[in-house]
Image (cartoon, rainbow, N blue to C red):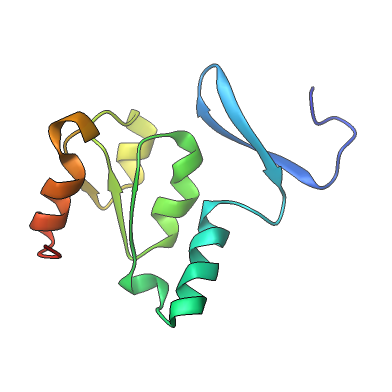
Length: 101
């Protein structure tokens, strides 16, 4: 195993042939919280978009997790809303759905 002798790293799998190796205390959810803290927002006010397994922690963390239409089934299963793919203007469609724009 690639991380056999490490204690400070974890794997965030986003495709069956690829993954991210990140610090144990890192991740997209942690990055989002840092941005929210900076701008004085809470996570319930945040919306995130994702399509891969490495987006699951982020989609679960925010108030509204949006899976793209091309997302894997495990990502869609945890999403609050499923939109079209990026190529089909899924982000714009979801922002309109939630009356953000």
